[in-house]
Amino acid sequence: MGGYAWRHASAVYAVQFSPDGKTALSSSWDQTIKIWDLATGDEVSTLARHGGPVRTARFLGDGSRLLSGSDDKMLRVWDLSSGAVLRRLEGHTNGVLDVAVSRDGKRALSLSDEGDTRDDRKVRFWNLESGKLLRTLETPEYAVKSIALSPDGKRAITASCGERNTLWDLATGDALATLPGHLETVHAVAFSPDGTRAITAGFDRKVLLWDLPVSGKGDGSAVIVRTIEGHEKDVGCVSFSPDGKRALSGSEDETIRLWDLESGKELGPSRGHRACVASVAISPDGKHVLTGSRDKTARLWDTAGVESQTFTGHAGTVCAVAFETNQRGLLYTIATGCRDEVLRGWWWGSAPGEDDCLHVSGPPRKGSNPASPPDSNVVMAKSAKLRREIALLTRPNESDVFFLDFQVNAPARPMSGHKGVISSAVSLDGSAALTGSSDGTIKLWDLADGTCSETLHGHEQGVWALAFSPDGELALSGDATGAVKLWDIETRTLRKTFAAHTDAVRAFAFSPDSKRALSGAHDRTIRLWDTATGDLLDTIDLRSSTDHVRALAFSPDGSFFVAGTSRGLALRVDFKPEKK
Image 1 (spheres, rainbow, N blue to C red):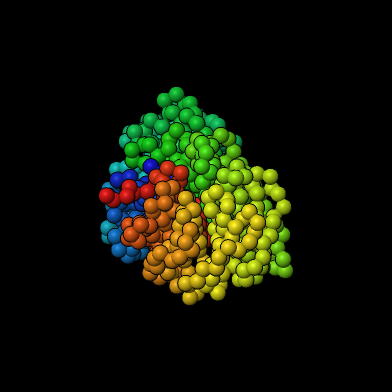
Image 2: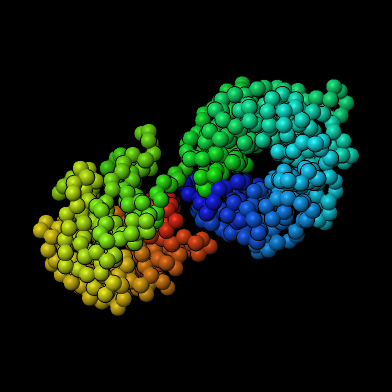
């Protein structure tokens, strides 16, 4: 499975795999629920009808519907094929904090935020098919923090402070047993897949495994089977594996931990989130883990603790990406915008340690407000002559073109002679460069002496994107109208013009063999081209997202590519093989 970066505009509070394991959901403080395709990493849909943060969401039954709860005090049942709201459940007087659903998707529990209303410290039990409120669980004068519904929908657990954790019979509303053991607030609870066990976790940093009584008879208490410790801060979310043999926990310490419930041994902590882990889920096949965090990301991991690659960290738009071609497996990204014009190096293969392993800053700006600087354009190449990575940096409203040397961070060397430069490209061997202007012209530069060797004409509007082929024989240019032009660099002539996109083209990438090329544009599409014939081979549609593609790069073996986006992400996409 490829690695995908999934981002909301604010904290992610709930994640879940669909029952068939083909999609996943995430809900966020940004008032949306997003559905993701796990095979492609694409955003399938965005559900945005709530009037407040969506704290919780769960798939129902076969995964064709979902239930969500929001700070707007509303529960909504959604049809995922159409995106329509099938039913609205009203009754809570404060925001909905959590929901739990039965395996068949016909019944659900909902929990309201504590708020200031003492009367709303109750758990509601719903028939989702009729929308009828079946029962309200009368908890004593304390606030319920988390809820769980048994797979058969017959029992529930409410988690609260200290020993006030209760197992309920939903047919009668009676309390069957208590779950004493935690000394402080319990923030998370989950039933095992067969409903005979439960796990709880909370502020005391402990995860407790319980044997639940079959009926209300006995001593009125569940039995602690195992006490698991390892987290350094409050544990806020838990989940069982599908076979019930393992458990997953997420914490304020920014880690997720996988536990063997038979031995109590930790199978490995996983770090990667940069804020509290707010939600966790294990895929139906037990091989992958989905986590959501207040760092605004949802991340995909395998159960060995290896994170599918999520490249975040820039404060501004990721405007350029490039792969190092040696065996180190190093991926470069660079971002521009407020306080971030920094090159970063990332390990995309087997990580040697640090995720973010390199920083190089661009030269100071001239006459611009540092609080809101205009976007720069940065292109990168590995110079065979210099035997290291170099870059060309251009800025709107500045006439100079700068060189950056990433290995020695040498002072930038300026060139002059092209007004209104808004795009640039460097040949792979570092011997030539292209710059594109807002007046539609393209200049070809000799980097040995910094002179302009040719001015190319053909675009009627500003040239926003440029790229050399790896062999240096071809170049692509794209303008504000969406047109793409293919140039012969040796003869300085135009080979083809493609009416490629419906909006400004912002990025190109050639495949390692120069036979294919990618183009990305403001129309939120990425297109794959045959450079010999000009045929369109494939289109990747991103129009369900608000992201614009700003940078593209093929991997050295051509099996996948990385796209840099306007919202600060570097996204990996595995390639479909070229059709014969």
